[in-house]
Length: 249
Image 1 (cartoon, rainbow, N blue to C red):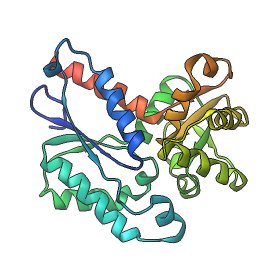
Image 2: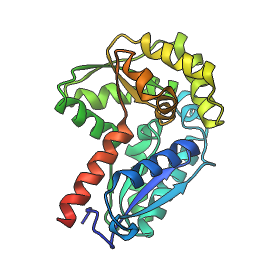
Image 3: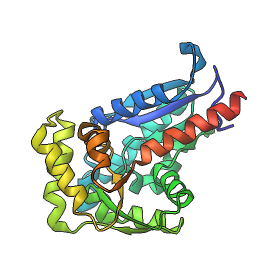
Image 4: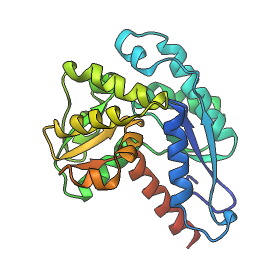
């Protein structure tokens, strides 16, 4: 139960928030899993659920909150019904709704067993293993305001420094540029400036759009910044691959 078995179980990606970030995570999984042939890798099911209500507005204003919870649970249950035993919610902000989403998803899928791969918890364990005790966090304003990162990472002995409301407009514009596939040199420069302005040398990319800006920045330019970037989806991919290899022996 809850293990990725070759030719049997599947990894489910609940994404679409936004679509390009979901596609990037899917591609990273395909590249991460070893295999000489296509059938050596696990089955991956992607639900690009791009028509769900705004997660940030549901947090800030309560807008369509119940509709959002219902849709998240429904899409999650749909993946389980397609044979997915491991689910990755490819949206940081959506994790704020999990206490309501998970029981409903369990009900909707008729009690079929599945495990949510909680990307924040996985990141916390990764940071602890690396000896990281303090991080700066860049994320959506919803993620920042609801405080899910400080709450989760505290369990792993990691203190989180968020940005102030004065930075929110910049975060929104950077995230939207990725969603609209409009990353240009100016946006890359602004992303670099944002990273350099953080209080800690270790910076968590707490929105699934930010890794695409990291890719656009490039490894050489990133290395020159003097900061270490931590991506919860990248950490989750490593865990999925490790579990897969352990399972197939």
